[in-house]
Image (tube, rainbow, N blue to C red):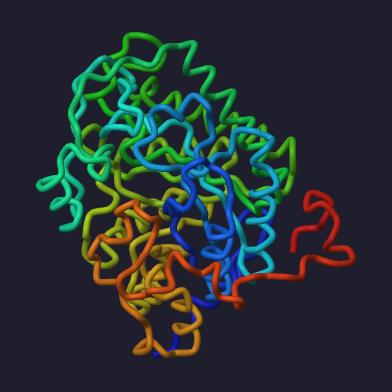
Length: 409
């Protein structure tokens, strides 16, 4: 089978992607202090060399406010000292042959525990719950060592406190500074994280949001913080670099809101000036789903959006080709496929599908210690030792100019 549509270029905002494949954002856990290191660089360099048109790194934590509420180790984008490592990552991905976006998460929020065992934050003072992670390994950890560090931050239920109006403004201010840092570092794009079991998405849920102020009650009020954060992100990022792409990742539906509500929010976010939309579920984004199960959501969003739509969790290249060819989505993304096989996209392009090392959804990649690994790919987590991924030559000539001074390519 020829995969022609998957390897057509596409324009996203000011930049062109060489194909329709994207690496979905997922945390690697390679540094527990938030700073870039050689392993994180090498891991993403391998995936860039693997042929994908776009790599979205993250979620990277964009506020100091959010640090105490982290339920696993995050990379940080909230201080000028993070800039050298971020710039090196953006450079490595570009030199590896891909485009680089960074997904910025403002606050991990209330669902699940956290490493510091502090009271979580949600829109309101409610008892929060989170289903056990769906992977067999995660369930066994909970059953056999429920009080261990390995289990902490996974599935707890406790009383959350309501985030205050002053804290909301702090979150927005700190997040927008992170957008400036990311643009200054040279990332091609920024993705605003508005989904999953974190604070921004919780504002959309009626069961978690019982506020009586401007952020609670009506659908308009419950969506307000997502709109305000996105608008501030657009303004800050483009003040730093007018060419930077800004998109969003938003949950389609959950127990607390409907897909129709999401579609109305999508139109509002598009009116603000976002460049693309990244599809996902509401909370249970790691569940073992049927391949391509999110395609119907992407198809419906494409009917109302004029910007490119990214559909994740498409692992079979045949399903991906059909989704793009039939106009259901503009870009397909996968993470676990590229964890198991960093050359996944190159093999699809060369029509060597039978040679792909296929993810089995065992869940070992998400266990957190000693960082992202894979039982099928022993090199995952050790890419830094492979000379192939140690880029030794940086940009020269006009390419050596600060990225903000370069013309979009």
